[in-house]
Image (cartoon, rainbow, N blue to C red):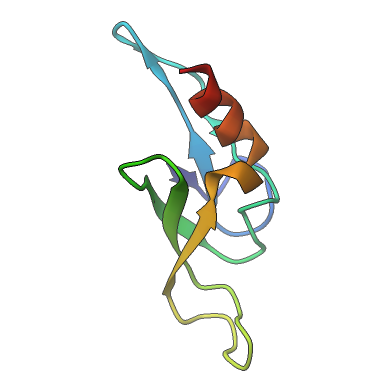
Length: 88
């Protein structure tokens, strides 16, 4: 999930929600370990749950912010997500 208006790091931030039975949990912001001041969107876990792949228009090296790019991070660097996946 991504939301632009629920507090957080800046533009759209990445959130997670869990479905238990037929009910979804309240979305939880994944925090500063993944969210930036730019727009962070469209996250997916890799099939092995080791990485999260997402889009962002954050600045990178010599590229100014504004160009949408694909990024990835190890799940181990995102405490809120790691805790949930480790509990499975």
